[in-house]
Length: 87
Image (cartoon, rainbow, N blue to C red; front, side):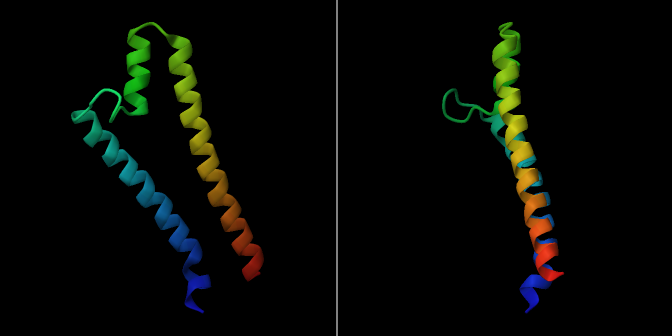
């Protein structure tokens, strides 16, 4: 009975923890970058921009943006579904 009550707060906490972990991971991997093993998207964008490949940088950025929107949409749909279910 307690799970339905805390599910929204759990989803919000998960989203915040995910964002924080992602930010920490970016900083960690940036210090230990190994080509073709631990390259991260922001570093790839900067590399593409340094090579004047603006289309490649824009493509990577668009993929990152679409992933972010998909995660946010999924969280919003889950919250909406739970609100309707709990009534």
